[in-house]
Image (tube, rainbow, N blue to C red; front, side, top):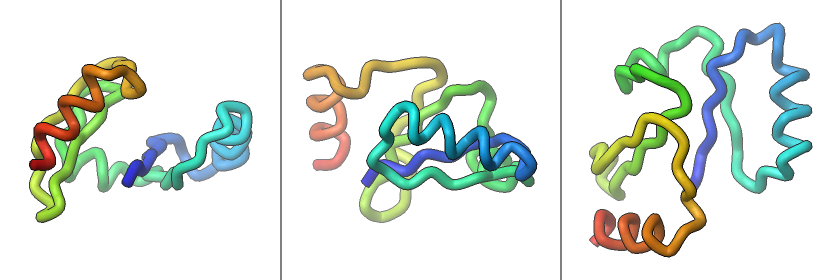
Length: 82
């Protein structure tokens, strides 16, 4: 499952919705305007990606942009989820 999380303020909800539509995102995007999710995962930079296992444990995280549609990324995800 892919889940996006925006750290924008609740007052920017319309801008977030426009961004989602413009990129034609097919996954849910949650609004973390109070920063609780960022705090829980100790987010140190944006963008950040977390790979979370079936048991809820964080398997890996990447700070910065990454091409998640690449063959290398799919191989990494397959490896980490086994």
